[in-house]
Amino acid sequence: MTLFPVILAAAIARTASPSVPEPDPSHMSLKEIRAFNKTVGKDHPYFIRCRRDVEIGSVAKAHTVCRTKRDWARADDDGNRAARDTVRLMNETAGQVGS
Image 1 (cartoon, one colour):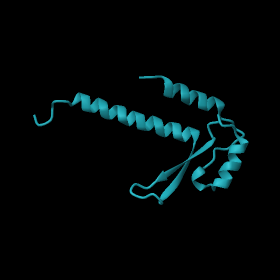
Image 2 (cartoon, helix red, strand yellow):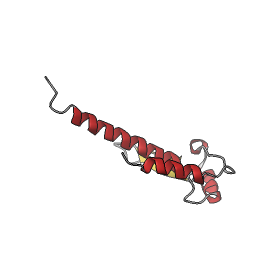
Image 3 (cartoon, one colour):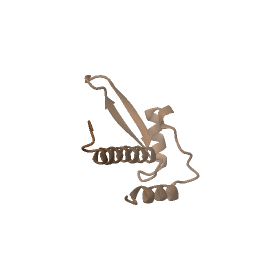
Image 4 (tube, one colour):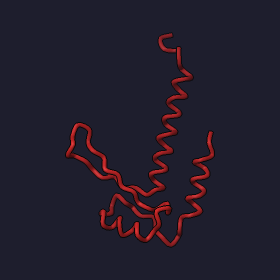
């Protein structure tokens, strides 16, 4: 087990400024997101990053997903944890199929 998620969470908690309220990017326009990002630095946990997801099987259909850096890090950690748990479970049950 690594200490990276614990250290990351502590660093985010320490750098979060109480004077800046946590934004809700899902209810903000891209113009509002750009204006908000100008008030916080790129290293701030509330800095909003957006990603364009293209629908599978289509070149034209896409939607934009915007989250704070903190939310992206949390989603990455959750995905990595799920992948590690899946691999661990597969290794623990290897050779037990059909017996």
